[in-house]
View 1 (cartoon, rainbow, N blue to C red):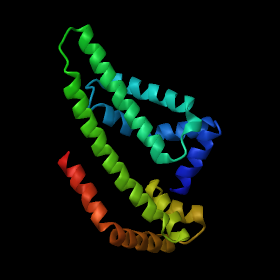
View 2: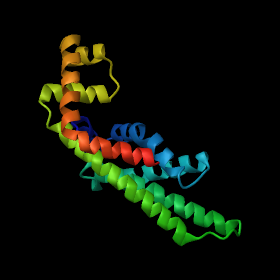
View 3: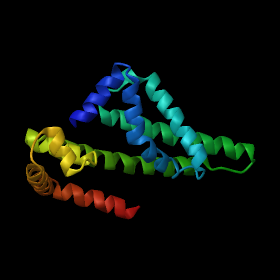
View 4: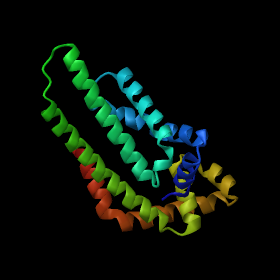
Length: 189
């Protein structure tokens, strides 16, 4: 697990609101995009996602790993969207085939779970990088520039470039099959 994710999760477990804000920042847009697969109204999806964050806060001590938190959030969004569709269909007296919708949703969640497994494997490989290289790579993933990383870690910009390039080479070699699978999965959708 990435050190930053572990810190966020530990702070969430301790009840620090700053951790919830960080999780919100990291996941809100992705959860909304996921929700629009089921509900075609962006405002409704945003409300659903907001409710999921309220549930996360209420259950903040239940999450021992970041991927269990992710799974909970995605499954909660899916279920809330399906409930919204079912309830809305009844209000408008439109027939809504729950079994077909649930089957579609289950397939999408299965796809998501496979994608999450690939992401977990990638995170595990990142954790296997040498510490200095891992720090540079993790800060790169946070969209920090080379000068920002150099300043944060108190190393030269050239060292940042070299560590980042070497990390990419190592990860590319270790993950070539998994990356292909992830691209294949993304290409299908």
